[in-house]
Length: 497
Image 1 (tube, rainbow, N blue to C red):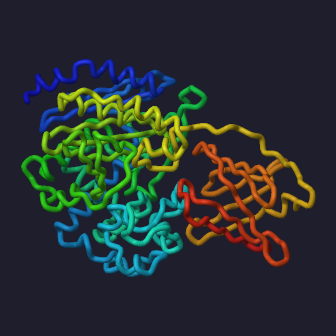
Image 2: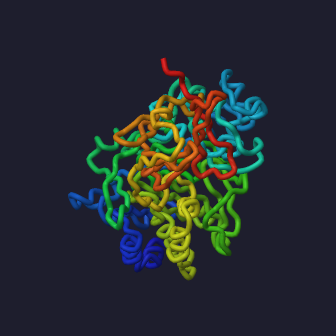
Image 3: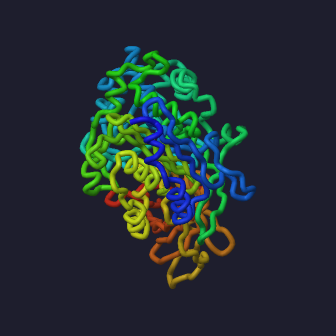
């Protein structure tokens, strides 16, 4: 297929992207299409800065979220090439103090297990989300996080494991994960604009602001700094750089005639390791598996390797079809957006010369369902944010039931060795919880329970306080976000001095 013919297959794509932006209330989106070494399209749509009406360009930096994971897996492959790491040697061989909650996982967990999400751990997102702890401190916290599945029994998406994998890579190289990615991938691939922190991104001349749809209006939100869990999702990049990254994957680890990562080890990252969940399960996508840092699916009979990402105000999708040598990158600055999926799948349909599937219509049904389904619409979501961005706002009430204890009885600090400290304090006439500097209003519902609003995630959860033999509040039980059937997290009250 020549370039001119491929261009012709994309006729009408501009109109489709603009229509999708309108339909899904997107602020801005950047789209790249690659065939072998040819760039068929690299174009921005909408705005990187809505207030100033600054348009998206191919150079606009976006947070790519979990599309970072493939970079972490690639650095591991590089270390395997250098004989510094083996896929199936226990992590404890390299990190003597490494410890998991489960003794079997402590002894046997490998970097392959970490990178294909089979550690047995549920997400435990609130351990790291907005936390001020260092990467090393978060790795040490793993030993206190309870699994909900047997080790290697089930695929469960796990950001902390990717953080730990990146930490291991940095330790083995005597530096940081960031330096390994910079020197072994960014520099040789000419990814000169890509950075590891939203703080660095905002020092660049062309970057996108993050937005969320609140009550039908796109509202700018703060950047979410996730440097501590960087290997799971902190890279910020643009179309120009991501094109080089996808071409490197299509070229099986080669760049300019030089083999940066061996074909054999890069192929391991592109090989199915675990069957996994997918919100797109259908006749077009009948099977979904996870490699190392990549999802590997059959899309309409064609092998498709891809990974999405989402972090506050941003969403991404990076996909390629190895047999057809086609690649697609879609970057977006709208929270929980499914635009990266509807656009990338439409591009692939066009290039395969197949009747386009109405993914937009199908995903609309998902998004209007319950929050766990709408979260799944972004499949590799970085955080517990969902496409539903607001909850019914209720004032914090102080209704006092007969025989209820005073609100001051609940106030204080509560700690968990893995999650850290949560502080309950009286604010005006009610209570407020603070974890990782996230403030959560609490509404009393009776029997030592409170409905707690996590406005950031668009949901409410139940806090249950427990008492000791003397009927004094002694601990706080909080359910895990998006993890039905798991044990709640128990925070023990710190005695007041």
